[in-house]
Amino acid sequence: MDELRILRSALGWLELGLPDEALSELGGLPARDRMRRHALELRLLAEMESRRWNAAADTGRLLCLKEPKEPRFFIHAAYCLHETGDTLAARDWLLRGPAALIEDPLFHYNIACYLAVLGDCKRAETHLERAFEMDASLRETAREDTDLAALRKQD
Image (cartoon, rainbow, N blue to C red; front, top):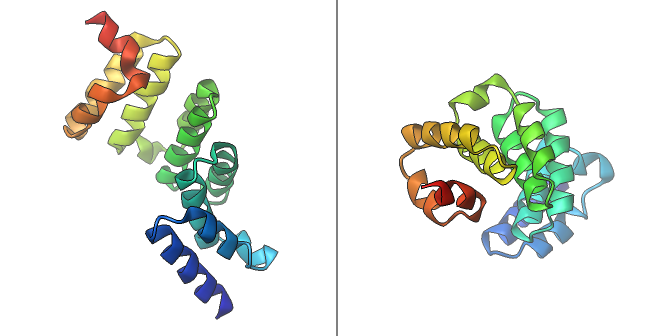
């Protein structure tokens, strides 16, 4: 029962925009409970919100190992790796994800970003177009995304 109270409290802190308090709350869980999926998901969100990219990358990869069929964990883990400056690792991690990722527009968008940063503009454009076909609202995001700057220079 205590675990549920702590998880709810951590979620409340996150909803209030206070990720450090959420992390502190999660720290009150016994070690065994801290490694459960829901606690790890909240920790990942709090680490991302507080821009603790190295910690978030570790938490995201742990979630991927625990739940290898969950596409969003691979998207989050790769994004965090990219934010640490390791775009090559981000690309490689995302490509390790489940086959279901191919149906996710964020997979194509993020891969396009990573490929553009790595200088593979031709493949980046292909993935970006696929992302736009799947979710046209991503066009607006792409206009301001600095990761895609190399693609805009080609136009």
